[in-house]
Image (cartoon, rainbow, N blue to C red):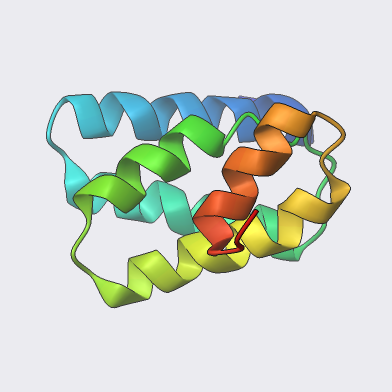
Length: 101
């Protein structure tokens, strides 16, 4: 529904929560699809609240053995952390991006 209304903020938040729920249920392939959707929104520079995705990215990063997914997570985090205003989320995104703090 959020997508139809062009409400990128709600869509992004919903995708982040959906990704977490899918991981909790053990549906890794569906979570991978959510990662793709989040990545597309980041690349498109959609209006989002940075930080909504962080816990999902952390959990997926800790579970996946797929290098493609790890690279996508690093790319998302590398794109987002410089624009993040919250120092705690910025630090978490930097860690996901592989940036030493």
